[in-house]
Every structure is written in structure tokens, then in C-alpha cells.
Image (cartoon, rainbow, N blue to C red; front, side, top):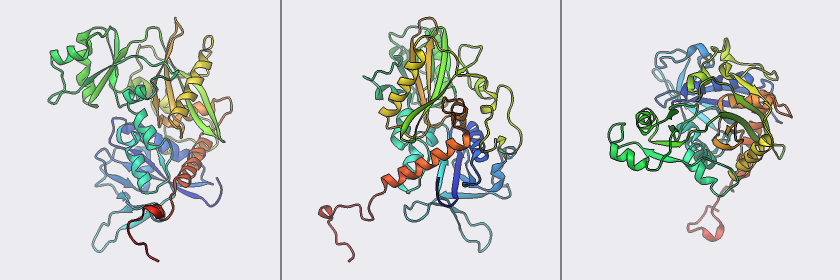
Length: 404
């Protein structure tokens, strides 16, 4: 990073079942950014979709506040203009008050799930000319949809499980017997049932019978319009790793093996075991190693059998290349420990805590502050590469006269 100190809008929260996890990720990032290089401020997207700024939003103990009554916070909107420096506009409050412009240089996206991670916000930021971190709008949209991900990699040498889809009915949350039977025809049990568009293991369940699968669907349909059912992997072991393009080369992180006693790692086991962090932002200082998100129990760089590690790293790189990868997504693999078979489960465009602990444990270690600096540098480079001429219409395609 060269030049003067950059102002970073750290955006988190969002209208998503993963709203609370996103707050933790955003506050961790604010605490890890190098203050010698960046001046960061929080941009919180509330559960109702309103955007807010203010110093109290940097404190973990502030959440979840009554924002309307809170002091020191202001409701803002992102200005829909690609001209000039990116900025937010704070609403005027009080008699004769004027709107306030809050300028920044780059958006650090710490959003998980749905509209924050599925390409919608990314496309909006591209329209408004705002440099932003992570994957682009197309990659984000594809990878947040488990079915689109499978279809994207059909024909590639990346193993993925077969699947069936169940669509939320027009009324209510429970499928009729006939609708379920038609969608589940030919399914062999047990299966894993989960939402198509969510992460953090929200809504995931195992069904050993058709009746159990039907009973799981209403819980999924509370959060998503579509459920996916895949064969349940016996002797399940999970392996996760992150990928990024650093210095022009694609690099993979350390591999983690999540530890869990149950067959499926549900949301509370994943994020709430062992309590939380204390103090401002639950943060770590730049340039220091630390524990993972909310005491998630994991083994870093476990010994993998045979050539499994080489296969997983190879699949991760191929996945990243095929999707035109940017950012530092985390790829999750499932393995049958008895047979050695493995499958790509999903790709997380913005992993919890940015997966910084995976990079700290990599063969070429990279601390959290350096990871964030890389993501921000990449955001500026992508924006510069995508910049069009002042008049993007070629001269031979102009139908109207230009000013002289």
C-alpha cells in the first residue's frame, strides 16, 4: 500500500440470518486494520436494511441497539453517483440541519449471506464506482447459490455430490404430500437437507427417512425459497481452506479440520462454543496472531491421508481460477474417511473472520492485518482496471452530438 492513509468503510450486518456473525467479522476487521495505513469507520446495515454510521457502532456491547434512540449514530445512504470520491450521505437531523457527506476510499465488505454476499451489493458498488473487497458480483452470485455452484462446475474435475431441489410452496411452509413425493422421487436416504443460499450451517439437518426430510423443509423455508437435499456422507470429515491471488500467484491457506462430536456442525456449535471475545470490537491488534472466531474448535494443518491434501488444494485452485477469483474465499470439502472420497461442499465468498486464522497458519504465513491490506490493494487495482474512458461510447456508435 502506497500513498496517503486510506479511509475504509467497513460494512457489516445486513438483512440476513447471518447478521450477527457479520457484526463480529466487521468489528474484528476494524480492530485488525493497520492504523498506520488506514482510517476505518463502521457502516452498519441494520436488520431492516437501514444503513448507519457512528462511533458507538465500533463497540461490540452496543449491539443490537435501538438505533432510533441511540446517541452518536446517523442514518446514511450510499450516493448513486460514479463521479468523485465515494461517499455516504448522512440524513439531516434537527431544525435547519443539512445533509452531511461522509467520504471514503474503499469499502471493506464483512457481510455474510443473502444480499450482502450474493452479488447484489457488489453490483451496486460497481455501478457507483466504489472500490470494494472480495469477489466480484458474478462470482458472488454464483457461489452463494449452491445449485448455481454445482452447475458452474459441471464437466470440471471438481467432485460434487448429486442433489435434489425442493421449492417453497406458494402458501405456507410445508409441501403437500404429492409435491414432496414428486420432488423426492428416487432419493436414497439418509440425506442432508439445507438452504440453497445460506451459510454458517443455518437450517442444515440430516434426514434418515422421507418423513424426516419433509419435516425439515419448513425450517429451511423460513430462511430460503429453495432447499437442497444431498446424500449424507458417511464417516464424515470436513476440511476447509482459503484461496487468494497474492503477488500474481494463486496461493492456498492452511487447511482446517473442524472438530465436532455430532454428525453435523450446527450454527451454535460452530459460532457459540466457548463464549465470545471481550473488549472493544473483540479485536486483535495489527500484526499479531490470534484465536479464531468465537472459539471455534478446529485443528489447523491436520495430517491428511494419502494424496487427499494435494487433491483438495488442486480442486481449490481450479475452482478459484474457473470463477475468475478475487478476494480470499474459503472452500469447504467433505470427505468419507473410510473410502478417501472427497467432494466440494460450498464456497464462501466472504468467510467468517475473513478466514484470517487459515492464512496465519499457511506455509507462507500472512497475519490478519496483511490479509486485509492485500484485499484493499486488490480492490483498488480491480477498480482501476475496470475504469472506462470519460465517454465510454465509441465514436462510431455515437448517435448524439457531444460538447466541443
